[in-house]
Length: 277
Image (cartoon, helix red, strand yellow):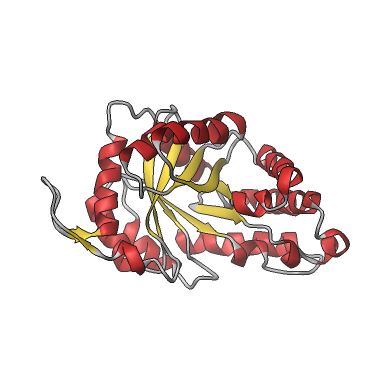
């Protein structure tokens, strides 16, 4: 099946649009890890406990590579063990935010898809089509392209107007990115699926982009700690053809800093699952 088909299947199986972000900060690990927070294995053990507790309430996990890479080779080994612990019934999105020339992107794709086994990755489009197509050449995999992100500085570039070009209208950068990603996804060399990263903190942009790209899947961060509203996301972006995958990291994995951290994470994931319908 294609990535989008597998995502639809997973969402149906668990009646969930929730993606749990795995962003393990050593200093924030809960009480059971207090004596060995600096050990990369603690990151793995923490994330695996979160996975086991939240699996009934989500359809995907998004490990952020930076938190593991910061620990060196042992951290990368921890990342591998975390990805191996994700059930086959759930999807793994490697939050890598790669974006380089085609020759380099081809090797990024090989590492993330063939070695780590990620089902999808995140990528930056600043260098254009040839930096994204290598990820789309892998069948049954996906690439979510940064479009209108949830961070405070997103407007610095993403909302700047860009002139009309060919059959493309004058529009903000984030809308131009969406139109281009839709074209790249339909490129003859594309065997995978493309989607957009669109932050929950800008529901009006979500609605605009859903009109521009009615069938592309959206990966939506920003619900929870960043202030995004789940019901506003559903109203703005859910359609029969356009899937949404709502990521929440801190508000789930740090729901408690005590011995009950896993149960608290499960409860937080279940609450988001219910809020998203």
